[in-house]
Length: 355
Ligand code: NAD
Ligand code: IPM
Ligand code: MN
Image 1 (tube, rainbow, N blue to C red):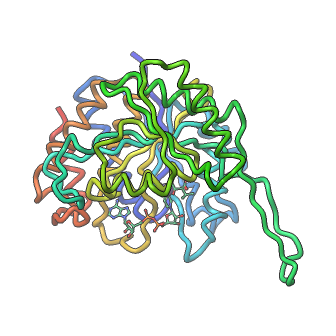
Image 2 (cartoon, rainbow, N blue to C red):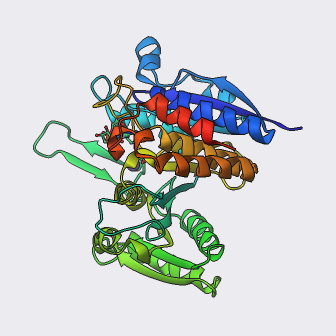
Image 3 (cartoon, rainbow, N blue to C red):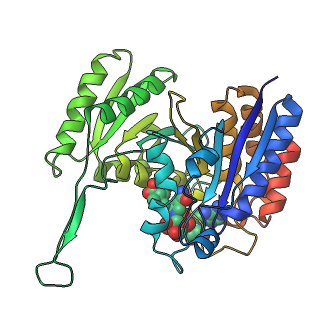
């Protein structure tokens, strides 16, 4: 029987608190479904590591984690000690780019019993996927700063769209839409204002749509799209966006389902040339770190996505169902969802409910 080798990287802040709960639930699901998981733990991609070594990761980080079947990640960033762009470009963004994880897949789902901040919304009304381009776009390293500290200071950062890069994320999103009952894709654009890259994005969407005649599609400028997430979340099925737009939509969507603390993500290299990274959408949350109150569901659900990615669909699905049963009980929810369970109590509840 195959044993899956998972690299485990907790990172900073609440990453270190939600990770043990994610592992607890993975172990429970693995045991119940006869899946064999082996975990290798790494302390890099954190402020602690940086403080000791002067860099976020060892020089041979790719050798250390590049051969694993998947990477299970917490969160990184400790802005009181190290600027975010240094810690993030020294770790998480390196994984995404160097492991060519061009899909960032982020489900948005209102769970049974969980109150939505949007009045009158019930489960089923909010159930869609954000498909975020994850290797190029607005997150580019093309640009620079000239004449620093003078009146002539000049700063640029170019948006990069390659045909390969745009087409492959659109293809993934259309395929996902085609596999869903509603077969509906929405593209996030801003081709009225961003007058070179975004019209190009729209053009490629139109070209890709021709290859998927069974998928209904539409597009919205990002400004009204954010408004429609709040006013009409039931309109959406699969929403595809550039790196920055996808980032924004994947915090807004989960907020409409009660909290960003439950939102999971997969940074996926669909070809399997490199390992994919599974991590909650949220960050290290310095404002609540150390209190033991972080919601572990985002990390736990990310573990479920990881199992499904590895082909262990039943085990992954059993975790999602256990999450639903846990969240349905107010007393088992963490504070961000109006409950009083701490991180561990919530994680243990999910682990016990996996069957
Ligand atoms: P954040 O997601 O860490 O926190 C935003 C707000 O949501 C905070 O009030 C926080 O307490 C709350 N929150 C987040 N996760 C929660 C959870 N599981 N349970 C309960 N409440 C939760 O975003 P931020 O404050 O913008 O960033 C903090 C740090 O994390 C920064 O260094 C940032 O760069 C980094 N960050 C990392 C990732 C990542 O590793 N993928 C993602 C986002 C932000
Ligand atoms: C996310 C995060 C990261 C991003 C940051 C921390 C660089 O917000 O994973 O959504 O923008 O991709
Ligand atoms: Mn984000």
